[in-house]
Structures are given as structure tokens and as C-alpha cells.
Length: 94
Image 1: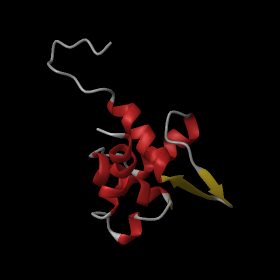
Image 2: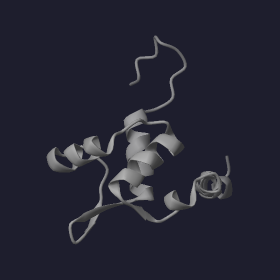
Image 3: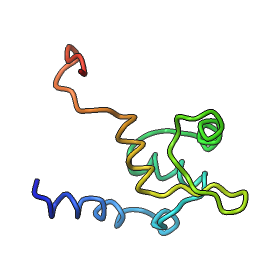
Image 4: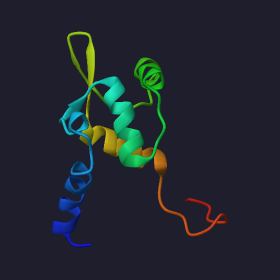
């Protein structure tokens, strides 16, 4: 994959997203839906709230009391959580 294709790849899934999920920053319930739609990760809004409290979740900004998750951070967090691709069940993952 060329550098141009790599940069263009994130935009391809944006076309399939509902308009509410095309914003640059998403509320917690939208972030949960985004992770499920784009990455196939089922993460409840309550889980994102818990991870925001104890750590280990995606980075977010705050607008007053409202957490806003940048879609780039959601993509980065999901990729880290999914890990690398494996060839077989005996692949150690190292």
C-alpha cells in the first residue's frame, strides 16, 4: 500500500458512516457506536466512562462536563486494543 493509499484509507469508512458519526469529536454514546461500526468493537458507553475514570481508555477532550472523543484517538485506541494480525492460533503474538 502506498503512502497516498494509507492517507486515503480513513476517508473510505467515513462515507459509510451515518451523519452523526462523521464529526471530528464524538460524545461518549457516539464513540461507542463508532467503535462498533468502524472497528467491530463492542464497548458500552458505561465502559468508556469507567475507562475514563480508571485509565486505559481512549484519550478525550472535555467541553465543560462533556467528554468528547476525537475519531483519530478512537481509531488509534482500537488498533492498539486489536493488536497485530496473526497467521494462526500458534502465532505467539510477539
